[in-house]
Image (cartoon, rainbow, N blue to C red; front, side, top):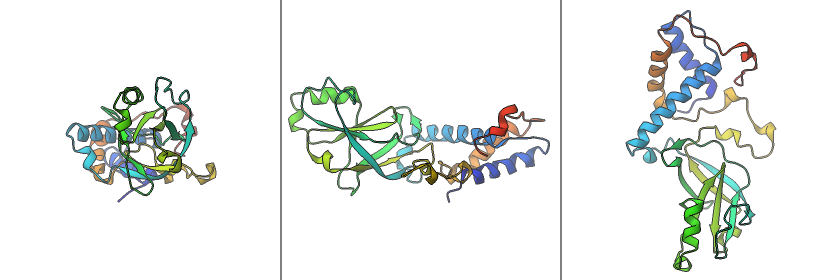
Amino acid sequence: MATTIGESISRVRGILKASNEDSFLTDRSIYSIISKYAKKLIEQEQRKRKLMSKDDLFIPLPFVELEEVNKIEANCIGIKSTCTILRTVKKLPEIMNGSTGPLIRKVYSIDGSFSFEKTTRSNFINIANSSTFKYNNMEYYWFSDGRLYFPSKKSVLSNLGGVMVEALWEDSLDLFCTVNNEDCKPMQELMFPFPDSLFATIEQMAEQEFGFSAKVPTDGADDGQNILR
């Protein structure tokens, strides 16, 4: 069952207070600890090659709008063949990084009829300039500076409008506002972007880090500007 950031902080705060009644923790401190250990657990799962099979980790962003860009904007001036290049209009919410880059499990058309193969900009330039490219029917994407790029020699991209992206998001998808900033919720109300199944282990790790301190220092004099409040 998914929980909000505020609920996640309250759960860990309760564990830490039970361990040490004298400790004082800010919301920012607690959320920093939660995120740190959640990332470590995710990295462990990736090393075990179990990560991509965990459906509760990879959440689809159902519609990401695309726009056409030229080869210069896409940093693909080395491509000799003719192709259309689209990219996501907005930068994506923050995606957790693994050993091979952002943890994106799948990128596919809105109707789910076809998916895109992950590559890199430099690798696609080599593919596009090869003598066999005209026989290549695969569709590709790469990630750069928070955006996805979609090159194609076909007209299929011009009719897409948008794509669906399934990734391990570090930010809540509620931050990906569709109209304006008024659509965004306060940070405490956003969903915690890690699976609830990890929480028991996260709580134990947080207790080991802070549970035996006589007093946990605050974030400093500027904590009144805490982003979580």
